[in-house]
Length: 167
Image: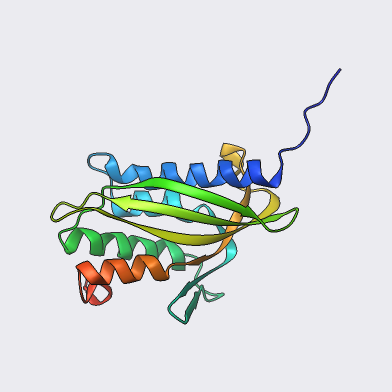
């Protein structure tokens, strides 16, 4: 009787990134809502998920369990309200294993906007294997952090004031 060995950090992080890519792929489905996409994305975030963007640190307050769901939903709604739409996909990724249980995931996303030329950006996610992650999918671990400077820079080049769009 042979037993399968547990997946390596590289294998687990790769599977996790592909699952996150499938979540952003929901943007290509007709009639999908911003909240449906946000739910699929946020389920990949660990309980202490933190975002870093141009020197700002964004973390969920302890008394706001839906903080990231609301924030990601609003971010997606801004894409729609700005006229860009949200036809996005995972373009590429590179996993840099940093320990037996952690990895830096360099994830490149691309958008085919409703107006103008498409572009791509790379976010860097900190992934940690804490055992079972998204249990229904059999994934391991969660994202603990993201550095999104490249996303914000490229977005603001195309839509100045994007962050201030009221939704």
